[in-house]
Amino acid sequence: MKIAFITEAFPLVSQTFIINQVADLKDRGVDVQVFSFKKGDNENLAENFRKYRMGDLTHYMGMPKGKLSRFVRFAAIAFRLMKKKPIVLFRSLNFKRYGRNALSLRTVYLADFFMDRNFDLAHCHFGPVANDFVLAKEILGLKQKFITTFYGYDASRVFKIESKKYYDRIKKECSLFFAMSHDMKNRLIQNGFDGGKIRVHPPGVDIGNYKYLERKPGENINLLSVGRLVEKKGMDDLLRAINVVRQKTDKTIRCTIVGDGPLKNELLKLRNLLDLNDIVGFRGYMSMEEINDLLLGTHIYVQPSKTDSRGNME
Picture 1 (tube, rainbow, N blue to C red):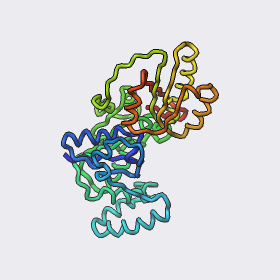
Picture 2: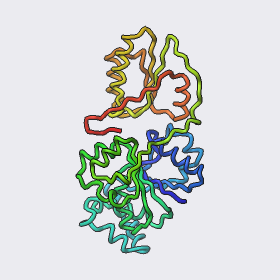
Picture 3: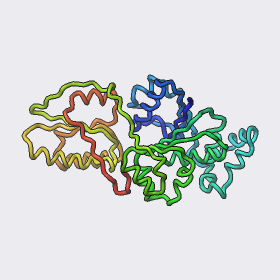
Picture 4: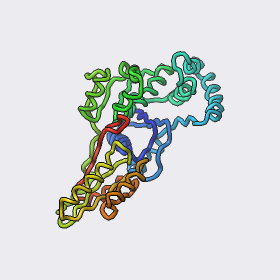
């Protein structure tokens, strides 16, 4: 079987679960190719990315951000499509049907990106990615079925900022949906998805990748938390909770936070305000292998989470 993984950006240090899915499918003899609209990160990637040479499995659409460069490259794409399948070019420029996607030339780039690709099934990661794929599917007349996995913002904030029709196409055309939790499944159903097509299937954890070491806390208790430094991850709540706990115990508490993001400076200020500089350390992004080493010296792993001010949640 040949499966196309379709992503917004790949690889991303914050989406190691996609890297692991590719690796696990490769171990099972599945031919996986990754189709990414943008290039992702180069640092702190899980070893599986290099071990399985995923860079060689990945194709990038590469639509330029600048309007001028996008139009210049469009000329070459249009010439290529006119030679191979002119009907595809005309369909992709149907401004009445595709609106701003056609005006921005995204439909043309999508059609060119998926032209003549050979796969049996497409797996779209995140709802908006499925929206893009269904455009390419229609323009090119692709017959392959596709499935979609929802992970967080695409099943929460999207419902608050987009129209009620935003997911109408994939509701009808997608064969199967995966949700991370029963709560997420219920949110999808409440927003018009067919519950019979939704499976609760969170990313798996290969426990063989984690070494076991018995830990016996003495005077010290070491905490670890990993996540992007964004509001929905709740790292500010973690800092406030540590401040409460340290006042109620005689034990020495140490906490390491692994990750980076737009709220880093705010969290550093909060750490100073709560006088937690000797207790909480920020390590930035790290690879999964480095995080596993940290876990060996950790007594408690903490993973806060909440709904942010924009309605984004896991």
